[in-house]
Image (cartoon, rainbow, N blue to C red; front, side):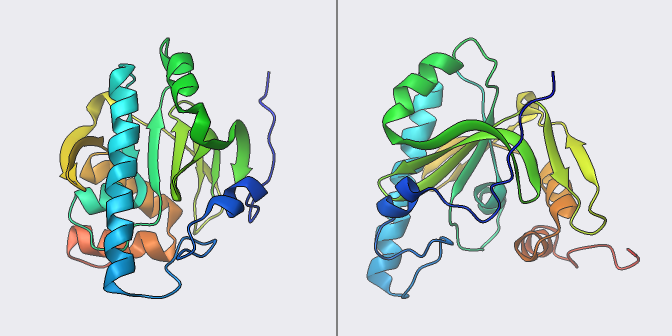
Length: 207
């Protein structure tokens, strides 16, 4: 049976908006730059990452960090807004894990078409830090150039250990991350690719 799909592009649940820390915009950017705000934000990111990794480890749930945090773990410098990871929702320990984090879940899990993603995921607000966890099975990404939907294999078993925000975590391997971001092709992805490869964001002969 085909899963239900909902287009929630551009929609942010009211529960999410009400819990955002004052120094953040809805889009996740700092409203005003300052050393104090930056320091507090980095501490919040460290705390949130430690919390969610402790939870998955405690429940022996496989996971893989992706997105901006994975880029940071591989040497990227772009400011981090949210923490993204994949996990197998069909895993025998998923239910217990979900119960353990339910206090902070503000949306989902739900199968959706959301921008360039077609997947099942949930949103967490951990004291103002956004965390999104997607199901690693049946993930489709919309190619930013062609508009075609491409099925992705999120190979959690081959994640690599990297230290980021003071924590050793399982992240998407560098080459997989680059290919993942090439499909999406957003400005942030192009910036990450350029930093991680030391070259142009896309091959120069790309049409």
